[in-house]
Image: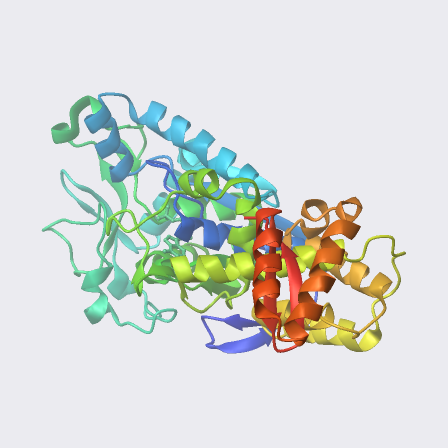
Length: 456
Ligand code: AMP
């Protein structure tokens, strides 16, 4: 049975026992191209939704798009264009990037600007119930002191919440430092660049946190099964979502299981636009060429989704090496008929994923099982296909079975091995070089020498 780590209870829990699973994952703020850190989070939840569907769950996967935000306004001002144009351009770029990464499990994308009436209605409910207050000339704010459970996700108290202030939440008139903005009145300083909507709250635009709960309440109702996002969103964003929705509806829990992906880092520092240590998805795809998607997916799944994952040239080289090994092994199955994977190996694969989606352990099953005489070649073929469908590696397509290593290459490799075992190193070195020139690499491993076609 699948168990998942719930950031709220801080323990592993079984998936709710029902066929229908409603999954909400925070979408991007569309003011720029996405980077590999964002890709890690979206690739993971794409895998997760597909994995649940393959097990027979009916997954309704909802994702918002933050298309109204200070960063979008700032970008429009810099570029001398409208926020609407900025948001549309980068939403399209986001969809293109996701398509290139094979991320296509989302059932519904919900741009915030299409949910203004739901946002206003939710803020009105919070005002009616006494959770929100007005700061003249500024906006409507959530009073975190009114919610005794505020802080239950992140473990922070209202008194510690000042670092939760971000984006548009700054105001000198707030009751508590950690109070956050629900609705920002139109500011004259931002003039024409600021999007605004007339409303019963006064002319303005939504705060950052309220769009998600207004959207999820519209699509899913006040309670649902799983909410996901990067760990950086746990506080203040997800904490604020819980406070808003549970205060507005009076029902808890808002969400049964909270899932957070660890950060993709560079030299230990979270990859982010503001730190300047980012690689955009499109630059990565262009640089790494035709197998870039498999490479990114392999690297992502080689790490547990909750662990940090340091992106480096070394990690990249390692992933290339591992994938090449697998491509070569797949090619060697030329002419085999698919057959069932032995139950013992299937159990190892399933046990790994059932344990809070331990993908690195699952990948090690593929590595180990396809190595030597572990199972029949036809079963290996099936195992490759299972991993391709589960993780989107496309090993089968990349290393086509008709592309088997030719007799000429195999012959030269056999000669290499013979000369090496006879300690005729001048000869074996020459053969190694010759094979390299033909696009093959000879690797001498603990299990003996192997020949690998160069794919990168
Ligand atoms: P944003 O547009 O900043 O809200 O980010 C979109 C998604 O990417 C959110 O779920 C973030 O938590 C996630 N994200 C941002 N940076 C990283 C990173 N370095 N590693 C993993 N996930 C990230």
